[in-house]
Length: 282
Image (cartoon, rainbow, N blue to C red; front, side):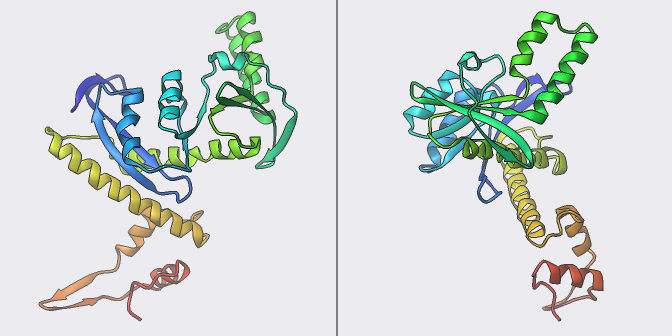
C-alpha cells in the first residue's frame, strides 16, 4: 500500500493517503480509509462515497478536489456538492453582480449568485480579507516578487471567494456551509498533530489498517470530549488532553475479585459535576 514520495518536509519516504470524512452537523468523524500513495482525486472519493448514504446531504470538499471530473462524477451519483474554486479557475471570469450582503462574525460579506448550466456560482467578497490581501500584494510588488500587471490581475480577486455547487440555496447558507469545513480541517489537524496518527512506522498492510482504525477511534473519542467540554462552556480553559490528564490521577486498585476507586481529588469532582458526568462513586 505504501509508495515512495515526498512528504511535507521534502523527505522521500513510503507514504499512503488517508481519506477522512466528517459530519459538519455532529462534529464527529464518520469514516476513515487508508489508500495507496498513488491514488488521487476522483478515485480517492469513489469507493468511499459509494459506501455512504449521503442523500439529502451536501458534500463539502477542499479546493484540491476542484475539477470538472469531480463535478461530473458527483452529478452522476446525484450527490449535492459545494467546492471552493481555485484562484486561477476560469469561473472567476464570469460576471456575477454582488447585489446582496450579510454579516458573518461581524464581518461584512457582499455576495451574488449566477446559474451556469447545471451549476450555481456563489461569489463572496469579504471586506476585511480584501484589505489584508491587497496589503500583502503591495508588499510583494515592493519586494519585486510580482509585476504591476500581476498586481492588477490579483487585485480583482482580492477578498473574493467563489464557490461552485449543483444545489440552489441562498448565498448566506452557501457561505456558512463553506465555513463549516473549518471544523473538519481542525479535526484532520488533530488527527495529524495532536494524535500524531499520520506517522506510520509499520511494514505491512494489515498493521497499517489496524493503526488507522485505532487512530480513528482515538479521534472519535477526542472529538466527543471536545463537544462535551464545549457544551459545558469549559473548552476555553481545558482541552480533551487536559481532561484525560486530570482524570488519570484517579486510580482503581484490584483486590482479587473486588476493586476500589481511590480518593478522588476535589478538583476532579468539580470537573465531573460541571460536565454532568457520573463516573466516580460518591
